[in-house]
Structures are given as structure tokens and as C-alpha cells.
Image (cartoon, rainbow, N blue to C red; front, side, top):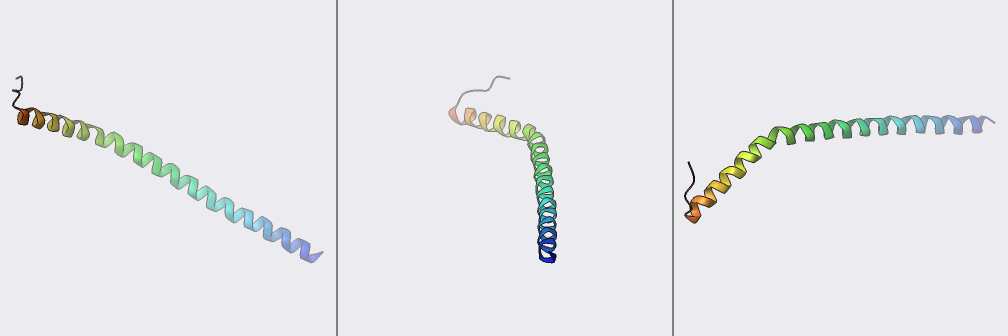
Length: 68
């Protein structure tokens, strides 16, 4: 009987620990997702500027004059 109680306690403790680990991993994944979304929004204007600069450089290399 005592052994059954010990096994039940071990199972409950194991589930509690695994639940805590899962809660931490899901929380970290959500924080990472928010950081990546924020970084993408922050870098979007920079990326647009780089693409515009690249297009202007390619136009100047090909000899096409840029409209003013």
C-alpha cells in the first residue's frame, strides 16, 4: 500500500515538473515570436532603403539616367 502511494506521489511530482518545463518553453517561444515580429517591423524600412539603393545602383551601372 505504501509503495502505491509513493508511485502516485512520484507520478504527480513528475507531471508537475514536466508541466512547469512546458509552461516555461511555451512562454519563451511566445517571447521569441514577439521579438522576431518586432525586429521585422523595425528592419522593414531599412530593407526598403537598401532595396531602393540597390535598384538605383543597378540603374546607374546600366547607363539609364535617373529621373529627377
